[in-house]
Length: 280
Ligand SMILES: [Fe+2]
Ligand SMILES: [Fe+2]
Image 1 (spheres, rainbow, N blue to C red):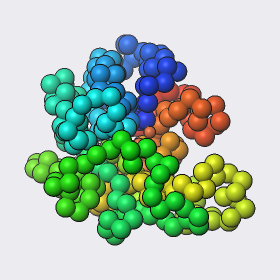
Image 2 (image 1 turned 30 degrees about the vertical axis):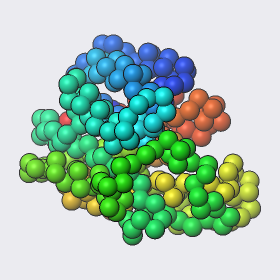
Image 3 (image 1 turned 90 degrees about the horizontal axis):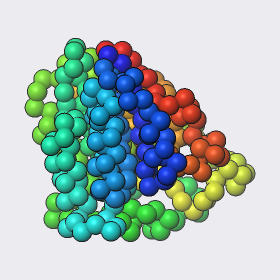
Image 4 (image 1 turned 120 degrees about the vertical axis):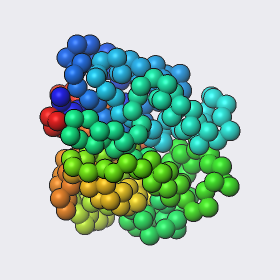
């Protein structure tokens, strides 16, 4: 049984829907796909895509991303209400959103959010000169709404606690995990610590006032990865593909991303299709 991954399908783009259609109907019938979130803000389209992909694989694991929880043309109380609607849909349609043991391997979906600066020491925040402190360039700022009463600390802490309630069985042996958001600072940069030469930033940074590290992820995710003994973790969100080992864990991002990012060559390796991780 082979294990594949992809994330950030963003099927509001026609080119991305066509990419999914090119995935074979027969080739993956004995295989597992780990799908790392950001499928679509439109629930109907998200559900249609999940079912379409589900039918191609033996098993599909999924965690929602920030775009999946956006409130735009739908009527939900808040983004947590939408999260629960998605979880219910997955449970009803045999899409795996809980830890499961397959053969001798545990596959563990980790729900997550980013810890913003000021929300706790688990933030991945890395200061940047001239950044906008109000996240005005970040769409979550407009489309994500949390129920205040349920978030005494932060959204990242809420999902961390929710995962803890799902880790009821003894997870041991070979463990593989999946999140949408980034688990460690190292993953945000091509080199770590990053090169913050202002000339380089001027040349390559399209939005110098936008600081991605404010909304990238949380070290709470890594805490959970290591707690369950995961040796391979897949994630998405940044639309930069990586495959690196850090302190005994292999971290892999394999995003489809936006068509214009692929044209600009920002997203590498996706032209070969899904990423095959291991055989279990
Ligand atoms: Fe994305
Ligand atoms: Fe995302």
